[in-house]
Length: 300
Image (cartoon, rainbow, N blue to C red; front, side, top):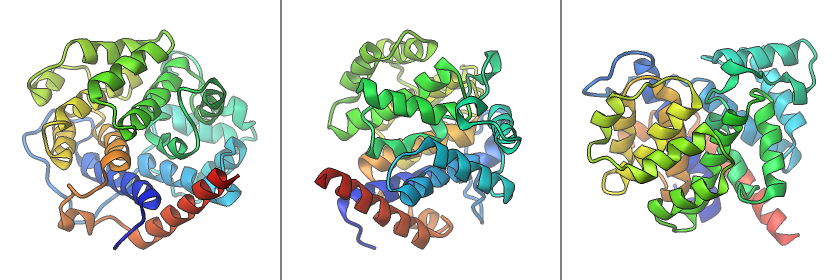
């Protein structure tokens, strides 16, 4: 299947992310493992489902509209198409179902600094510059649908920033430095700073010792260390290493896959694994539609 450059980036990001989600699900919330087995059939969770719903919303309105995105999240939720949700995402969807406005549906407070925004934010990279103050307001609106929390927002912003930097051919080191300079004061920024200042030789061994949960700060450290690790390793093998670490394996691997797919494509993925991704023809069609919208916006 030959896909032009723009749609290839979209397609690869979705596919690589879904592979991370599917491979990571069996190992979620269990101790670290030595080997990752490919399941016979791929099962996807809200990581992939909400990311895909965001892409569908973009197609539906030919751009970004958090109100429409929230409506589509609710529709998919009520149809039973959103599974494996964390507490904050579930609470937000129930709030939407009860009639709350999308701007106030997001959970706030101590328990709302989860990785649920970062896991679904990648579609916005095609339409927003995370270093632009105006675009940051749009990104913040999309995160507020489920998480009204500065750390959750910082995590989503950091994911878009690293996608933009690496796609611009910046080195990982230079990217991390720029992100640390550009992010507002937060634990997420501190986590990236520690990755930048203290690289490790053995990614898996180091991450085994980390507290690994759905807290966005933990996810950011694992994903950003994985990107460092992938510079000299197979991108797909690094995804397996992310899963071996344990913890919130599906989200960590899914976010890593979204980034890698967007920047480098999915050529590292073995064909027998790629063939297990469900409804790839539909994903290709969505990718083509996103490409058309991107091009139409560039022509304006």
